[in-house]
Length: 239
Image (cartoon, rainbow, N blue to C red; front, top):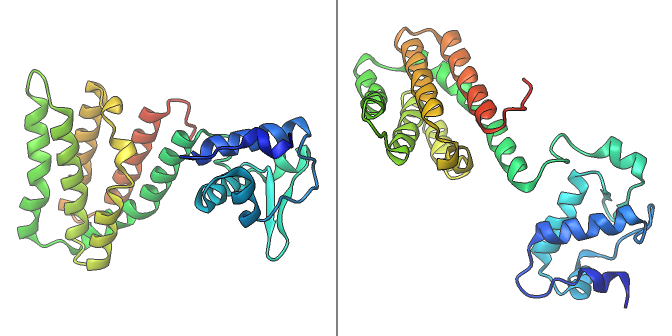
């Protein structure tokens, strides 16, 4: 039996499981620091895994600092010292944690500037369409048992409406396209009563800033809203 036989994952391969098994072999020294891995094509044959799964596992290990990749040189195993230096800010997180952090990182890049533009570019008649999902969410919160799914829907509609009043089709499309990626941050498990109320309150502040044509306030309100979401998801977050 070779070292590669121990991580055979034939069938429906899960890249995360493959990554973890490779990581353990590297940490134990059975795959030595400084050694080169077989090519991706060869690894798919050795492991009985799809090339996509192998590539995702290798990329995950690179992010975590276990491997380095250079053009035409393939994958090289890093030493323990190099792993500590080369692991990315997402490297020590689980796949679920990393996905949420990546999504929130994306949102923090695109949504505050969109809110800023909305404050400058909206027309007076568009305010009603922007406020509509906000009013609906406020009414939902008055119920004895607010519906998390309804509040999630209003949340999506509110953020989409902000993009629409920028009058930039590309920004509108960007926000619409990313709603699927943002789904992990809107999971029902995160929707406590306090969290739902906090989110709707934040939306009201964002709306007020846009209505007042105050771009700085709109941007800041959105940034704070996204920060609160991340803290709610991960209370250990340090901003």
